[in-house]
Image 1 (cartoon, helix red, strand yellow):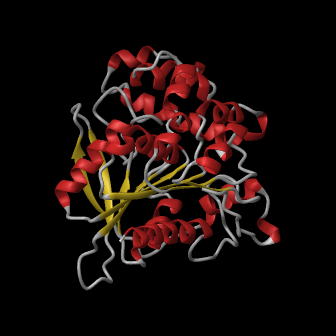
Image 2: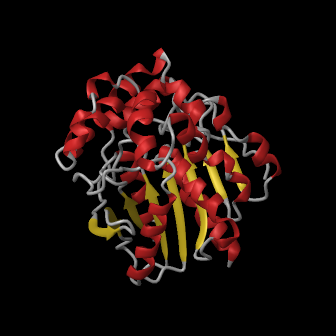
Length: 329
């Protein structure tokens, strides 16, 4: 499909990419989202926690569901997750916030955690959803790492994707993990990298209580995300090293196999995305890939002003997915 001309224009005081990244995280509060937790047991003996938020204003049960996936070291409680859930709920669509392994507030049981390529976990989640309800339309929505995961799942499934899955959306998606990892290693992103590595180190210490052999890992020697992926993520997820993980888990290799509408919103000023994360060439020739690249927006930002109710990307994503579903009827 053609590249979408973006209409996102933040207030001039909030145009800076880092302001867009930081202010929503620090200041945004999303009310009226009430979660009910469901624990899903995975096919390999672990668990995943799902947080449901139903469109309670409906007089009849919703026939549509949005499955929302967070980013690196996120959870269902992040403001961007709650904001997206609320945007769907007020439009009559149920949501389920998918907490990756180890991200729901409890250490997961298996030695491995989540990764950008864990599409088998998405399948376990979708299988559980099908058992739990009778949804005629399911949408997959992902932020950052979760955006890559959603798109990779759609590409891997190709024509075998469940017909109930009508569309997907990815916001601030690192479609090429290698180029995104290079950006994160740069000095300009030190604060983001430091925050991520601090949180990941904490999880390894907690996991070592379940697996004492992991206490031999020199956590303090792991200084950045590449070293973490080399020593932890890649080997536990079945990859040779970080480079192998980044290459095989990147959705950019699967995008051309997607057969349902897929909406990608990646800001041009996103400090975490490398140039390879903007699939212009694929979007121009692919019948199902819709790419929108606002000049501003940062990474999972898209804020006009700090106190607004619904953010631009929430409106655009919900309306896009509802529109393509109505077109399909």
